[in-house]
Amino acid sequence: MAKIGAFTFVLHAHIPYCRRAGRWPHGEEWLHEAIAETYLPLLDALYELYEQGIPIRLTLSLTPVLADQLADPLVQEHFIEYAMDRRGRAERDVARFEAEGNAHLRELARFYVEFYDRRLRHFTGRYGKDLMGAFRRLQDAGVLELVTSAATHGYLPLLSRDSSIRGQLRVGAQTYRRFFGRDPFSIWLPECAYRPAYLQPDGTMRPGLEVFLAREGFRLFFAETHAVEGGRPVGKAAGEAIGPYGQIVRHYVIPFETVEQARGTTYRPYYVARTDVLGGEHSGVAVVARNNRTGMQVWSADWGYPGDFDYREFHKKDGRSGLQYWRVTGKVDLGEKDYYHPEWAAYKVEQHARHFVDLVHDLLREFHRTTGQVGLIASNYDAELFGHWWFEGVDWIQAVLRRLAESDEVWLTTAREYVEAYPPREVLVLPESSWGLGGGHWTWDNPETHWMWEPIHEAEARMEQLAARHPEADAATRKVLNQAARELLLLQASDWPFLVTTGQARAYAIERFTAHLERFEALCRSIEAGRPDEDLAEECWELDRVFPDLDYRWWGQEV
Image (cartoon, rainbow, N blue to C red; front, side, top):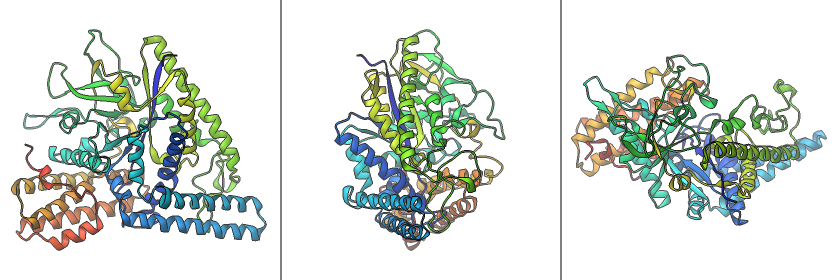
């Protein structure tokens, strides 16, 4: 039977730079938790299906800053310490619950002993501590399309200098080549944030992000639903926000191969129009938008799968060990939560996988019936949602992939495979957009975070000036300027304003932001004084050991 539609999960994996930057509750343990609960289980699930000969496909974005952390020997050793500590806590809980005569909690504690024991065995044995190599082998085998992102997840629409956008993107591409031995095809724009061209105060036109992507060789990126469909933000981007970002976002579709007007749909890719020129010229860069209907089966706080009463409760933790022994139970206080039953949760995983696969079939059948086209559902999520926030989420992904691989109607694919098989036939003018609250930039630029952007913009201009002033620097100056560029990239991470806005780790985010700014400024002062401080650069490198192949000249005049 001919396929009537296509499906891909698009998972975006990102943790801000937290190597040697504190431990629980904020710091490197963010990364350890993600390795234990998301990245290792995901690798296990994908390898299990692949080794069984099941033809699965999945699209996975790994940010450059995450990739360098996963490959760092110190992070790897710290993860082993973390997993051993968690296993030890579970073992002590086994003895404690045995002494209390609580058989159910004793068995749950044993469940966690095996959970962390398996993580340790696979991390050190099966994958040899090399998670990046494990992901690469799956891409080489055709299971994954690995996607890059901007270097430190910088919020590109709000960066003031073209050199900063270029630096974020070029580091992203170079890091991808270093780890995967090939050029990237697709990129995940941080926060799905896009900006078209605009007229600057001096009368010149500043290009849209599509121009920067094309210059760096990218062929595809992902957008939030409303950026393509038009109308108000939906799903993840929906919500009340202060500022002008809750208005209806209008879009325009320019016929490419056809002459009739077409309304944007998330079921098809589009070429992104160059917004700095007239006439409908396209950039050569395609966009695929998130399918909201499938997305909300996971994202929705009201009816998404993770809220099922039998899944593990994330927020309630044991007072001694910190382990989680309760299930969601219902909309009740934490003190009223019932004990977790893994076998109940496993049953719900299969139920929800079946429901999701049926939904995918229904949506693609309807699109094919009304258009005659082989549409794509791109179901986009933060990777860490699965396994970390939704403990059973990776098992659910595996069950969905297994079922879709057996489908006679749905082509389980990757974003690149689909776009190459069914290239865009129309050109779309995208509006300014993101998947943040209200669909615009408010989450990252609001009364709580606006103060952060002036020092970022000043640092951008300073880096550009120093790079232009030293086009062929001596060894000492090069070392300091390269480290200054790293500190600038880390300063620009979208995580710092995001954490301030949400209040999740406000003080920590401000501390990290300020530290990178101070390091950047000290490095620049030494260059400006004619005494490049190599010792300071080395000290900063030991703290901020990322992007070893970065070149400060990328922030200079573009050739």
